[in-house]
Image (cartoon, rainbow, N blue to C red):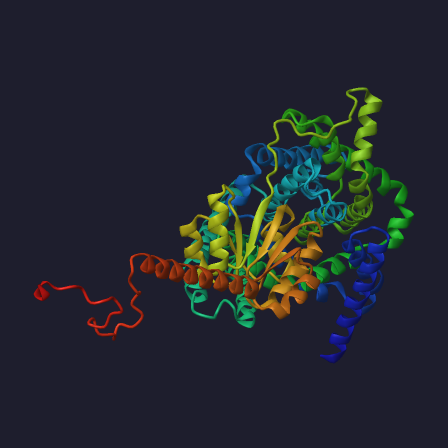
Amino acid sequence: MWPLLLKLFLLLLTAYAAGILAQLFRQSAIVGYLLAGSIVGTLLFNYATVASVAELGVALLLFSIGLEFSFQHLKSLGKDLLSGGALQVLMTLIIVTAIMRFFIPTSQAVVIGCAFAVSSTAIVLRVLLDNAQIDSNRGRMSLGILLVQDLAVVPLVLLVSLIGEASTLASIALRIGKVIAAAGGLVLVFYLMFYWIIPWLLKREGLFANRELMILLAILSAMGAIGSAHLVGLSPALGAFLAGMLLAESPFATQIRSDIDAIRTFFVVLFFTSIGMLLDLGWLATHLHLVLPATVVVFLIKVLIICFIFILLHVDNQVAIGTGITLGQVGEFAFVLVAAGRDGGIIGPELFTVAVSITTLSMFLAPYMVSYAEPLAEKLLVWMSKQPATTNVLQNEPTVCKKALIIGFGPAGKKVANNLKSMGVDPEIIELNPSAIESAAKEGVVIYLGDATRADVLDHAGIHDAAVVVVTVPDSRTAASMIRMVREMTPQVKIIARGRYHRHITLLEEAGASLVVDEEQMVGQGLATVTAEHLSETDIITMACRMIGKRPATDSATPETESNDPAPQTASTT
């Protein structure tokens, strides 16, 4: 056991070092993982040992992607982007398959077409975030297409597996029927678990706030979905994706995504290192004169397809070309698809090596293409004399409205939310207590359940779209941790924090708060105001009594016969 752990440690250490090196050269860390597997992985392990564990990484990756695909999220993309993304995958699949059909059999061509239809979500989003371009027109269009591509991975994997398992239309139809029936049964089981049983458990007092139990629940949810899919004869990746997509509708999805992230990262790194073990660097070096032109051809095909689709959708030419260049690479899921084709006996070792080499080279060039997409698009437009290319505006695009994000939905958070709503602002809430769900529903505000000290929770809640963040958490140290994370992710955002104790004001300011509301000072001012009003009311009563010649009653026990008024004159003296 200990020799195995030592080898695993060395593999991960090499992947970590290669990832850092890749970042220094403005590459994705994924490229470093691939190189680490290619250089060191083959010396430490045989492929079968790592691949069996790496398959779990793919399933966990699809589980986390499924968590992003709530039906509301898909609806927010708009029908144009959804249809455009689906059309891009379909057109790329058909065109690449048609071209490859001249060189290889149809079944193999379909596998390559499926693999090259998807782009790299990990690389594109990382570069766009680093360049502060995620909220640009190009960034939003790219994000929409990438999400649709990720969603298409599941049917593409299913298509590849069907090609490998069936040879007649009847057997394919039978297999599809079995898959649909099994998937329907899984969806029913997952629905009962994720919409009824798990929410009932998590609403027990203190359970959701217990981080250990939540992490175990996240792992059990993912592993249970993967194992259930395997038991009914489905792809574990498909089961994981279905479970994640159903969980995405749950208010607990944000925190579960955060808790599963660490273990997912571990297995995903193993997956990419296992793929790197299949990359023959010597073969790539000797065949670069063939792999490089093939990579360029794939890039041009994808760019032209994306530009054509966006022009049909009446998108500005510069945005269309820039988005096409941004998404022209082949992505990490190509490894999953060609591996499925190889495991199904559709493609042989030589074609597999070619596909892996093209994908790796494409991913290596991807960061540079994403970074320079806009300048290249502008120069192309000028060269083609289509338009001056001085703007970057999406036609008929609505103005993006910045939002207010409130962390904590206790009495203070509710008061802030109600006041903002009265001013026409719809705030969004991050809260750790599940009991806040009903309150938020009554108030009509969007709520994300999760720990706001976690970057992925803040990211899912849309921290990058927030104009102001209000931290109402009473514990100053917890609030300071939240403020530091918010400030690290969005340096320009305005952060207003609640300072429960005056002695902690400096702590919150040093953490990055733009403004701290001193609760003790406000309470003191409020008490002083009420006291002054009370004294003022007493003075008015005293003055009024003096004006009518009476002394105000100061003691309810004073006899009514006692009076300082002079005795009235009586008629008996007459």
